[in-house]
Image (tube, rainbow, N blue to C red; front, side):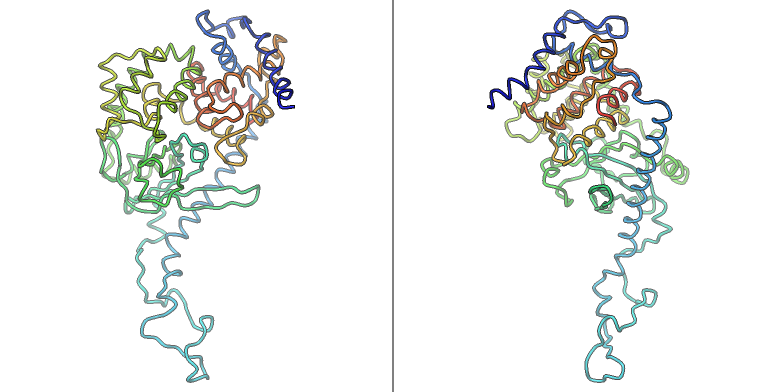
Length: 464
């Protein structure tokens, strides 16, 4: 029975391979970038690159964007309300001294000798209390804040798709991060992820320095020691938790810049210095990745996980050099040494291979990354960090692919080609992890210049 099921399931893929084998996309739009030196899998991966026709009419697209903006604004308001309640009210209402005021022994009126009155009979108005709270912050002080959205830099799908909203408070230089969680359609929860406090950079040239306004911009990394926070176990596997800022409140940022005497326009110079050597290497590899980005990125991910015997995500300099040789990626020795000095700031001779990949190849911008995460969240509705291939096959749509519209391929053929290239590098033939899903679209994005074209690939495929 099992053999028969496998035979039936495999037949569409075999038919797709036979039908698409040797088939070249005709015309300038579909012919660009397909060369004879590419393998069959490379060509099938490139078929997705041209899936860029607009999926919706303008009116539908506007309505969808407006609905997403309203939902995002509601989430932000929910988190703001929770933050203000946590920082202002809890210190007074939850103070244990409020229940037993020192030096006071009230008795129920008219019942002398029967002991203290029950709590609900006592007068407990907050403006009359003499209890001192640890926090002296007022609503006016806390209102001077910068709101930003962030994500965890992680290969774990469950962590990478967490929705985090943070706040930087100008009054004391502190910050806090909350997680917004949606349970079904109507139930939500807002939970502290990083407790409010003054934190310092844990990596890079600003290591040990406290965060300030200049550290917040789209693409910035915020680093924290994992042991200092009550984080999920999966986040504690790496000693340093890295959050990537994916959007900020521009109006609040402009106000804080104008009000801050410490803010300097050259604050981004540190970032430019760190990325100079990365850009040089990325430029030398761009042409190779434009043609074979999907296979290189997904293949390297599998290779790194095989070499990583300790399963901690870190590899040595020798292992990275060997990986570049295996995949025929030429990086001059001098450039590699400069790259390693920039990455290995702890001098441990080991680097997280996610950081190494981002430094060597670059990565898609946060606008594109947001749609990749949105597509995966739609697939991974149970939030396990892994999606069965069966579910991917059901959700993937090939109706508007150029080859299908032109009558040169069927929907099943295009779908099977996508699943073949996606599943080629997966450790399990039956499931696709977030890391593999992200690697696939990371490689695909190298050959798509326009952001909207890339987003249309995802919208057409997954209906987001």
